Every structure is written in structure tokens, then in C-alpha cells.
Amino acid sequence: MASGNVSIVTEFILVGLTDQPDLQLLLCFLFLVMYLLTVAGNLRLIILIALNSQLHTPMYFFLFNLSFIDLCYSSVFTQKILMNFISKKIMISYKGCMSHLYFFFAFFSISECYVLTSMSYDRYVAICNPLLYNIAMSPKVCFCLMLGSYLLAFSGAMAHTGCMLRLNFCDANTINHYFCDLLPLFELSCTSTYINEVEDVGKKGH
Image (tube, rainbow, N blue to C red; front, side, top):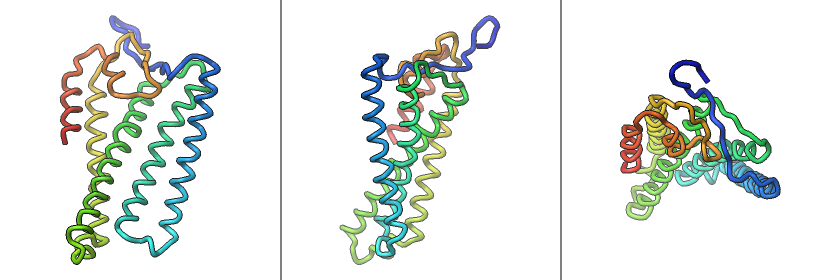
């Protein structure tokens, strides 16, 4: 921590789910199995869609991207929680915490929501306008929908992370969680989180 009138936090301690060794071992095994199944399932789906030309349709294009996002999302999430089970004390730097917040909470979770929205629109067009489906969901439209999803996720993630960077963390540096999430960080902040809370509610409202 930096010296001065106020100690500014430069690293955080992640508490994790439990401190009981036997339970940690069991949870570590369960999470590892679920992660391996998630990776195997998503990779299999990604490879199948990529190699099978019959699956090069709008629905499977969105499903391909959804599987990719889920694979990245799970990897960022699980590697941190597994580290909590293996190590007795998990330290994460301030920059690392902000990066983890950006990739885990913000970018991948927001992009997943927009991809699901695009998939819903695809099904809506297929059901309500089947004769115009090939025109309404052309490859160009699908590409624009995916590009828009990622760009909106990027802007949303930047907004969340930018608002978090304006906060100061003094003295208290123990996050009662297994990753850097918004609410646990709000509780540690020694400055007002009003703007952050308004921004978070605004994003959920959209």
C-alpha cells in the first residue's frame, strides 16, 4: 500500500467460497469437472459449425458466437475460482482486478446478452416473415448484428470499468467474493459510489 495520510489499496485479497480444506477439495473437483465439460461442449459445437457447410446459417452463426463467448466467459471465471481453492490466500493487483472486472463481468456478460437478443430477432423473423427470411437475415445483416453486439459490449464494459476507476479504495482490501465483482468493490470504496450505481441501474434498464 502507498504511504501518506491515507493508505491507497494497490492489491486486493479474494476470500473465496469457503476456508474448509475438505470442502475446498470437493468444490475444486466439481468446478473443474463442470469447466472441462463446458470447454468440451463449446469446442465441439464451434468445430462442428465451422466444418459443416450445412450449418452455415444465421441461427448457427449466432450459436457459434454464443459458444465462443461462453467458452471465454467460463475460462475467465473458472481459472480464478480454481486458484482460490488451490491457494490459501489469493492476492490480485488493482490493475489485475480492473482487468478481470472488464473481461469477466462486463465485456463477455454484456456481449452474451446482445447475442441472445440477436438470436431472438433471428427466430422472430423466421416465424413471422418466413418468405423474407433470407433477405432480412442476409450474411451482411448477421455480420452487422454481431459487430454491433461486440461494439455495444465494448462500450458498456468501458463505461463500467471507467466508473470503477474513478473510485478510491482506502485501507480495506479484502473482497468477500471469489472474483472482482461490482458490489463487493462498492462496499470497499472510500468514495461515493452513487454515479456507479446510477450507471449500473441504467445499463440494466437498457
